[in-house]
Length: 557
Image 1 (cartoon, rainbow, N blue to C red):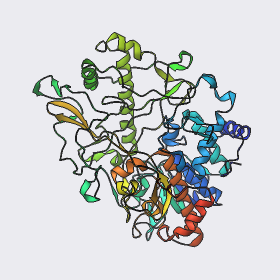
Image 2: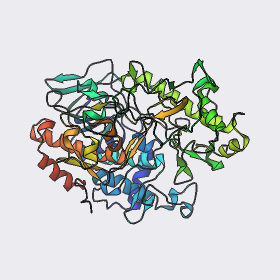
Image 3: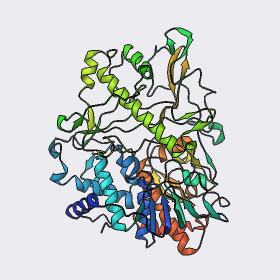
Image 4: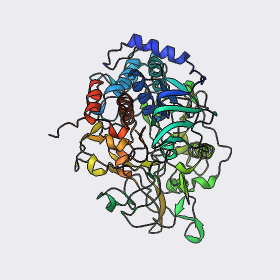
């Protein structure tokens, strides 16, 4: 058994990992019905499903991707957390189990344990004081999630919400949801653990997309930002197809202006990317392929940045065990495909599944094309090509997906708009949160949103990295819809928060925390015969604390 007391020994957990590797999810059975139905197989969906099952409920976890863990098992192995003090319950259990895995000699397949530099964001990557791991390989994370789900007895269905059929409701409550496999899943309580908020939207719950104006919630970091200094392009990059000739048109992905004033609202989304798992180890390295649809013009800004003197920052080389990276965006021209997750009258959230797959493939090809360009294109100086040529895809990751991550990093899509909205003022302790169901601690963070012409040059806009000071509470009311909209749905990721507050809350460890808290509330609602809005916070708090959740921010000294 995996216990919330974190008493699991390495040998016992190694057995679970081995079992998980052999585990094949059961196919859909005759009756698709459960007490708690979790839509979404990301980290918070897993913790929600496991928590509900451990509380004695019949649970169905709907897996649209077919691999558990979302971004946590799709390359985001250099964990964005802010402080390990926020971890409790199942989130603590997950990172502890990963730590235990790496205490085994057999875990070090590509390098000796002694050679790993053990660097993380703040504490050591594998911290002996807390026995928590903050960096790890994707396949290890997925194995832990698989083992947790199997041990809890969660039933997994591999399918997606059928966006062409309606969600059935009885009054204000969801009665069943349609899947693309042709079945309807009946439940008493539903949890939308998708990155897009698809179930929330299908259930008629209010939501927003884009950036609010600063004035709406008396914030300072929301709305259009202007060309900031972080992850910015160097001065001098010409925005026109023919340098110096506006009549030749703008380069791909460049807007003529910001589209509004600093602090004003817009409907744009921060950029997405894949968190690439790369290695320089020849025995485990797969060469970077040239995409079949490669277009040199897609990389003109990259060429001009290099011509202007950029020699690094094309992708991060944050190392996880076994000589692999979590390769994220690292500069003004890097892994983020800025401005390509929305357009006129559409954004990622409005697309259907097929359209998202097509756009995700374009993101993949753009990133592969960037790497191929850096390694091979004659417009890249030879010394830089040689420097880049050492990198390739990790052969032992994502082995059924051409060694490419399963999930595109959907940093933001829909956000619920409930009666309570988390803002930067809650994250920075300027406003109180009286019904905390989990803690966040990461920077108020947004990647760039667009490229535009500023003083005759290409500039990026939208990057924000503002400190929160110390851990803050996240309100239960931000996880539940307005009472009149839906009484049996909880939303632990696409929750009710402004763009800039969401930039901190959206981190994967927090998603795990809120997934567990959502499931706990769902079970209490079932047992008490209540809607999610009627759940007693005191009763919820008592059970969360019993299960090891951390709810109260530390007192600032």
